[in-house]
Amino acid sequence: LYTGRLERAKEVHGKDLFTTNDYRKILERKDIDAVIIATCDKWHARISKDALLKGKHVYCEKPMVHYISECPGVINAQKASNKTMQIGSQRVSSIV
Image (cartoon, rainbow, N blue to C red; front, side):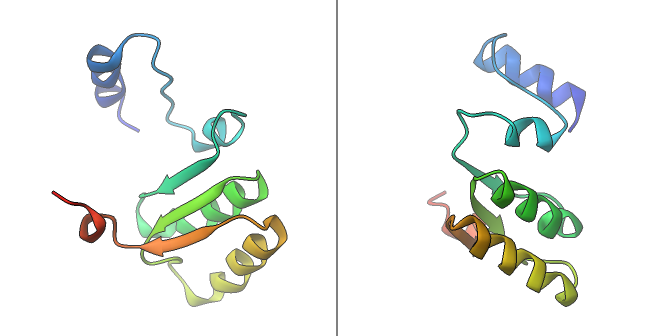
């Protein structure tokens, strides 16, 4: 989200690297099959549903939702999409 970090990523990985601060632009890309949702908790449900409905597989850091009332919407989106969705702890899953 931060301009400085997006610019730094291009410096490190090349000026042609796709960067954006709008997740919806990533979901529109045909070359993206899956996404990792590692935002603050309040965005997990919205982005998960949007990603699933755009046909992307989803790995979402825990918690899956910010409010328990958001669970049915995410579950229904996953079922409708027939895409894989996993909830987990990214740091715990890392080898470093």
